[in-house]
Image (cartoon, rainbow, N blue to C red; front, side, top):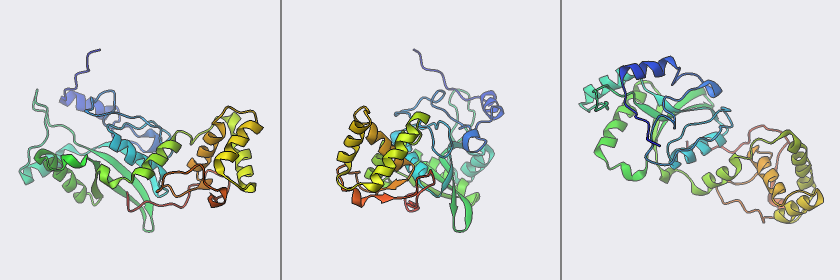
Length: 276
């Protein structure tokens, strides 16, 4: 199948604006760019967000990994990816700094710049926003990459929004891998909710090795092997049971080391402000 041509024109930009791209919040937000209309140089991902209840448009493994941390963090309220910057402002910044603004080679149309993530966070001083640009560490020696990042940095400084570059070196590997394991288990089908509650009650009352207890649960209730493990991951994802996710999850641990919380879908108390 031939690749879709992705040529920017003023008509196309006007159409995107009319479609509401770059506007809205939570489930109503529409990213400026999507996996379907923007050919990525890397792998693309479309995970469903816990906080937003919508599919997110991510253009690299690093973006996906950082998204997992944002979705897990309790002080994050909303995640808006591929967020468009006001073109008039970025053009003025580029002119002032004598940097070439990105443009469409075919017709010289100035391209709308985007920030990878605009995140709504809650803190002690109320609701704030942070902007994050995701880049592989090896690209930070590229002059053109640095020029475009400088436009972006100045843009958010003018907007009084905290902006930072995030590379793969800033993302804790075990934390990311652990959240990735749990992410798809956040929701359960109605028929499995009672089983999850039953497993929770038994874990609270039992002692011994976790994996043995999970295997015994499968046998006791005539479930497919691995069903209890999936239910346990659901409890972890919803923070009904807590572990230190900065370390690789050990399913052979003693259940006495589990941190049990109330059986609800409230967010936990683990914060990652230093990572965000």
